[in-house]
Amino acid sequence: MTEKNDFLSQLKTKTPILADGAMGTMLHEGGVDFARCFDELNLIQPELVQEIHSAYLDAGAQLVMTNTFGANRFRLAEHGLQDQVEEINKAGVEIARKAALESGRRVFVAADVGPLGVRLAPFGRVQPEQARAAYEEQIRRLAAGKPDLIIIETMTDLYEVREAIQAAKAVSDLPIVASMTFTRDDRTLLGDTPIKVAKKIHQAGADVIGINCSSGPAQLLRILKQMREVVPDALFSVMPNAGWPEQAGGRIMYPAGPDYFGQYANAFRQAGAAIIGGCCGTTPEHIRSMRIALDHPTQATNGQNGQIRVIERTEEVVGADKGSQLAEKFKAGKFVISVEMDPPRGLSTHKLLAGADLLQEAGADVINVADSPMARMRMSPWAVCDLIQREVGVDTTLHFPTRGRNLLRVQGDLLAAHALGVRNIFVVMGDPTAIGDYPEAMDNYDLAPTGLIKLIKQGFNAGIDHSGSEIGQPTSFHVGAALNFDPVDEAREIQLLRRKLDSGTDFFLTQPVYDPATAKRFLEHYSDSNGDLGKPVLVGILPIYGSRHASFLHNEVPGIAIPEALRKRIEDAGDSGPQEGVKIAVEIIEQVRPWAQGVYLMPQFSRYDLSAEIIEALK
Image (tube, rainbow, N blue to C red; front, side, top):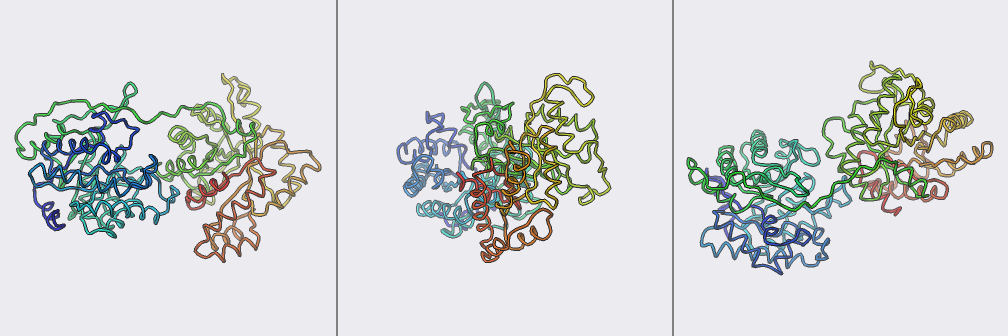
C-alpha cells in the first residue's frame, strides 16, 4: 500500500495516471449475464475478475478499480446478498491487489464505490443519514483491505456524493476521487451544471474531482474545461464511455473505438486531467491505445478504428397508453391517489422527472401538472405531461386554465394535448396575472370553466369544434372540475356544482381539506336537495410542513381553514413538524376514504419524499 501523500504527489506531476476501463463490459463479454450480481463474482469466480484486472494492467493501466461498484447494502439486497457486504468488498480488494502484485509494476488499487441504487430525499425515500451509514459500511470494509484510494463514481445526485465523501472521511484517511456522470445536455440527472458540481465536490473535501460514464470523450473534455475554470487548482479525473450508446435492433452499441480514445488521451492531459481512464464500453484495447498515445504523443495508435462494442439492451421502452388510465381506475372502484407537480421555471426537467419517478414507484396513480401556478412563468404543462408519460410511464392530468386564452387558442391547445397522449383535463379559471411575475400580461378569456367543460365533453369528444365544424376523430378527454367543500356562500357553490355537472364533468378535485366532517356535511347538504353527486371526488390533501406553514395557510390562503387542534399538534412537534404533517395527512385520508374516490396530494416545497411516505402508509 502506498502512502496518501505519495499517490497525491504522483497526481500533481505533468504525467497523468492511466486507469483501467469497464469491468462490466468485460464480465459480460466473459459470459456473465446482466441479471447476475457482478460483485458476487469476487466470491464465486475470483479468477475471472482477476483476469480482467490483469488484462488492463497488461495494456498499460497504472490504476485498477476493484469489482465492488454495487457492493453496498441496498444494491446487494436486490440479489439477497445484503449480509455479505464485508466478504464481497474484502475479496474485491484482495483480487485487485493480487493482480497488481503479479504485474511486477507499481500499480494503484482504487476501492470502487458506486451509487446506492436508491434515491435520497427529497427525490427519494432514503434519508441522508441512512445513505451515509450504508456508505460507511461499505467503505470501512474496503479500507480494511488496504487499497491506495477510494473512488466514488458514476454519481448523479450531489446530495448523495456528499454523503459518500463524508462517509469515506469518517472511516478512512485514504485519498478520495468523487466522480459524477452527466446527460447529453451537460447536466446531471437532477439538473446540476458542471460548474456547480465542481464547486460542490471541491467544497465537500474530495481530493480529486471526477467525470465518468456520460457520453464520450468529446463531451467529457468539454465538461473538464468548464470545471477547471472554476476550481483551477483542483485535481481532475476523466473516464468516458466509449461514445454515446445507441439502440439498434434491440441492442445497445458503443461506437467509439480504441484509436479515438488514443486521440483524446493527450487532449485530456493538456486540459489538466490527472487521472485518465475508460468507463462503459471500453476494453483493454482502449486503454492500450491511450497508453501508447500518452507515452508517444506523436505516434499513431494501433487500435482498431471504429470498432463497435455491443452490449445487450437491459432497459425496456414504456409504451404510450392512449386511453385514460384514471377513468379506468375510477370505473374499477379503485381508491385513486393523485399528486400535483409544478412545471420547472427553466429548461431543466431532471428534478421534476426524478420526483415523478419516486411518486410512481411509491404508488401514485396519476400526476397532476399545474399550469403557471400563482401566475408565474413556467414550462408549458403540455410538454411536462408528455415527458412524464413517456419517461416515467404514469398517467397525467393537465391543468387547463381558461384565463389568458381566447377561443382559438383554447381549441388548438386541446388538440395539441390530445395529440401528445394527454387524456385527463382539469378545467380551472387560473390565477390572475396581476399577482404574478407579469402583471401587464393579457388576462382576458372567452370561456368560463363551465363553458370549456361543455366545449370538451359535448363538442370535442363528439368530434366537432365550437363553430360546429368537424375535427375528424373525436377526442376522448376525461374532464375534472374544482369543488370547494367549505365555501363562503354554500348555495352559490351548489348552484355552480350543478352547472359543472350539466356541462359533463367526469370527476372533481377539491380544495385542501383539514376538517373531513365539514366536507362530508357539504356533500350531505347537496344530496338532500339534488340527489347523490354521482361523480368521483378526489379530496385535496396539502401536508403541513411546520408551524409557520400552518399559520400561513390558515391566515393568508383563501378557502383554507386549519382547526386549532391540528395547528397545535404541528407547533408542539417543533423540528419534527414535517413528519407530524405526514401523520395528520394520513389520518385525514383514512377519515375520507369511506366516502371519497381518492385523494389529491399537493406536496409543499418539492418534498416529494413526504408525499411518497403518505402514499406508502395508505398502501
